[in-house]
Image (tube, rainbow, N blue to C red; front, side, top):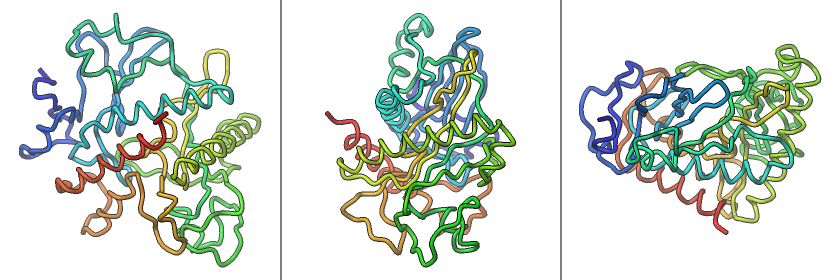
Length: 320
């Protein structure tokens, strides 16, 4: 059985391992899930999607880790449960701003195997089936990552003119909406202009996505700063329900979808330390890797430190 060792065995060629890895024996290291009796809709970079009925699906957040849009071969044990906990926390906080895809269905009655249900409980969400928008709604409060690279080349980010002379990791005069295309696993997201978003989803819906994204970011950034965390940037995904209402989907404000910096260590002019997978990106940048699949294996100490960073972020943000 897939979870006999409480670890997944990857069969997909994109994720295939050529030899056993001791990290796979770690508790709760799940690279790929299998749920007997539920049709698999597909596997994303991190999440496995299963059909429940015509109106609902089950999302399993695995311990897969992606960087530069490539799924890496090693899991971060317990990561999926942490991402699920953080997303549920933020979904609840933002419910008055925008609905989300969470349903009132529970795992009980959907997964009949009690042992499997216990293993999946902390990393699953039963959600409404929505029509996802073909963009990622990115909000930046600080100049880092691809935004910093764009600024160095053009003085702009996604066509938005910024003041001259900004340093790497500088706080922006105000948060900006810098959308991106939504890429499939193995492909790279690309920054796009707001005009491109309007062309893809319509002017009215584009404006609503932008405005809601900025409001969510502003509330989250203020809250996180009180907990000692700077949210440098983040990305949201949205979908439409059958009545055409805009809803948040996927995940929200997690270390996978955001850059979290410790406020007490923030200094503009260089890439700050982080509570997110930027730590892994920084390590990968030291390797001779072309940022294409297959990704390199990660040393045990990098995996352990990454897991600790995710745990620290979760504790700081969700603790009462």
